[in-house]
Structure formats: C-alpha cells, structure tokens
Length: 366
Image 1: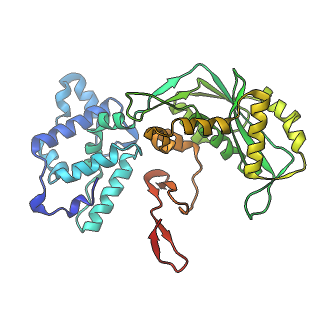
Image 2: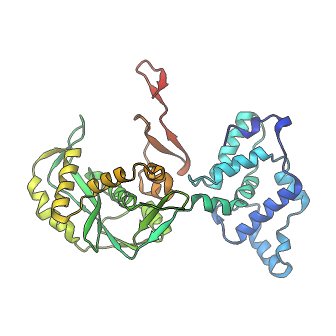
Image 3: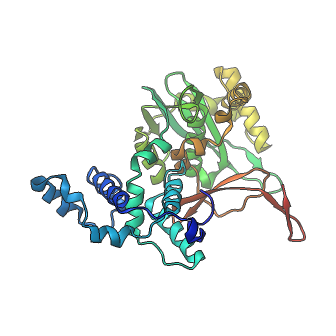
C-alpha cells in the first residue's frame, strides 16, 4: 500500500465498472453464506432472508439489484480497492471493522466523504480466499502434551537500577521427555501473564525451516496443554483457535518438583540479576536434564542465521502468537525494536523505531 488513495488526482484514477462491482458484491454474499466472518455482518444485509429465498430460487437471489450496487460501490476506484486489499490481506490479520476505520481516517484526511461500512465489508469479504492464503501458517500437529506451571524460588531479582522483587518462574514442560521447553522469570504479581509468555517462547522455539512454504518455516504445536496455572481468556482462546486442547490440573509436574528440591535449595536467600538467574537455571537444566532452552535457542538462532524467514519476528510470521503477549501502554526506545499497535483491542499496525529522540527534543536517524 502506498499513500492515501483518496488523494490520487481524478485524472489518474480508474473507477471499477458495474460488472466488477456486481461480482465483488456477489462473492461477498457467497462468502457470508458459507459462514465467513459472521461477527462483521452489517445490519443492513438480510442474510437469513436471502438464505431462505435461495432454497427455492437458487443462488441468483444473491445478485443485487443494479440500483443497490450503484448505491454501495459507485465511485470506488482501483486505488481504493488496492488499499483495501493491502490492509485486509496482510499477515497482521486486521478485522474488517479496522480496515473500515482506517479508510474513514484516510477519507477524512483527504476531505472527502467516508465510505459506508457495508461497502468495505463487501470489498473485504470478496477477498476472503486471498486473505486466508496471506495469513496461512504451515503447522505440524503433534500428539504430545505440554505442561504449564509455576515455581516461586526464595530469591530476590535485581533488574537494572529498579528495586528487587520476589520472582515467579513460569514453565512450559514437554511431558514425554521430560524437558523444559521454556521458562520465564517475572514478578509474582505477573504470574498469569508470565505463563502465557512461557507458552509463546515454547512455540517459538519449536519452529523449524521448511522449504517451499510462504514463510519459510513450519511450526510444531502440541495436541494438549495441561496447566496448573489459570491462563487468561485470550490465551485459552488462542490455543483453541490453534487446535490445542487446554485442561486445568492440580497434579504435580515431576520436573518442577525436581527443580524445587535441587536448584531452588541451592540458590535460596540470594539476590541475583535477572540475566544471571536465567543463566544459572539454564546451565542447571543442561546438566541435570540434558537440555537448556536458552542455550538451545541461541544455538538454533546461530545455525539458521542465514535464513531470512527464521530471523524475522515470530509474531509476524505466526500472527496468533500475538495473543500470548501482554498488551501494555509503552513507547519504542531500542534500536530496531518492534511493537504491535492495537486500537480498541484490535490490531492496527506494526511499528518499528526509525528515529531517535534526542535530549533536546529533536529527532534523528537511529
């Protein structure tokens, strides 16, 4: 997508012809009938009534009257269509409502009337197959079970110049090995968010290069997650959308019991830097269980450093992973840092730092 489509001079625009508009609207209704995006259906579209009529009169009932097509799609230019296609068929996975809000903002900036929601809905839904292809993620579905749990060692964590805190450590453990696929250290009051982050790290660590797929990666997902920690609704919903069963359990996780009896006793009472604590724990896991997730992740990143797809943001390659990350009000401060920007709980865009704010308030390139 390039620029605001409403600012393109009239002499350089091409208006969609009536046949194309009829086809777009027909494809949108057909997609809606198949159950695509029921949450986005405009109130002005009598889908139930059309379905009932189609039982007796056939699919021709989905061909709108030329006057309705004129009302909805008259004046839609090729530039507007391309902009909708770029916004909707993006790996960001924007909703139809968000695409409409963005087009309304562009129209407002250009000083022209906004496009009705039903028009954007029809344009988006006519592109549903293209959208599905653009966000497709190659997945390898296993038969394994992962456990999610917490430990609360008697230590204090020093994070930079901030005050020390008592940590909880969220774990994702492969049941069959057993081995720790990931662990995350965070304050006690962030235990639930930390559990979701441990799942994010575990899924991210299981990705592998794969030839002849759009992203260059294949992602391994477990069949089931057993958790001793209450997971957030968004986290459970993301697992369900990924085809992963989530079950709560009160059973002890053997690997975590071993951690409590050995490593935690050895560090009890100490104050550790967060990075030092993670390093000690990872080294212990390598010695005691033959696998340290931090070291394994570093080795894999080095092994596949030359592969462009592997080095890209995992949440960009696998959009569903964003549901495992906490949403916070923040600013981008690090060189090359990436943030996912949400508006009213829906994905808007991806932002990356390109300029650095100086102490005098001016800006310069990073």
